[in-house]
Image (cartoon, rainbow, N blue to C red; front, side, top):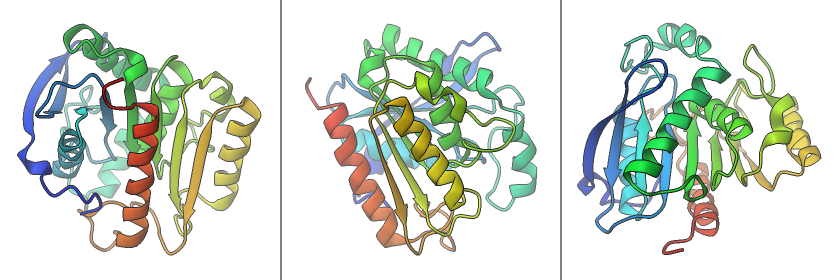
Length: 249
């Protein structure tokens, strides 16, 4: 497992429906044993809120955070896809632009505030793959977030939904991970992201992992998973979130 937490499956899980201007959105949630005043919004890969994304929420709950994974496919009703259905997934995520992402993340944050009494400042966004692009996008439009974590998010610096020109609006600390051999985020795009964040005055950390490609932290995809870079990325992520969202604050 990419995260050393072995008790994640024991978390108390729930299914919620969150209202959005574009209709109801399903949301998987994992609740820690003790009441939590901090949350992580886990944003899906290109394959929906599948078993792996649900497992990530449970790992976070095992560490004392209320973790939720909204279904960003709620407009098309697809639900989840198998990892082999890459060709089917690409047009689905290509259709989800910045406005839809901000709408959905904003709806989740409103839910956390009204239902869980967790303010925006005590919430982090953690996205994987397409969700990494979504996390970065949300951070450019939602002020006051506690933190943002991006695991190998393509499409941030190039493509139809690129948002580097909005980096100046980011006010939350950001952590980014990318594999050195990831063809979807070449070195020039990594440099462009770092430069944009630096010029915008964003507090951020950016790490490139040798010997790792795309989805290197996804232990549900053995042919892509790289244990050592994954464990280091998770260690850095947990340390980052503990600094930005300290327990009991």
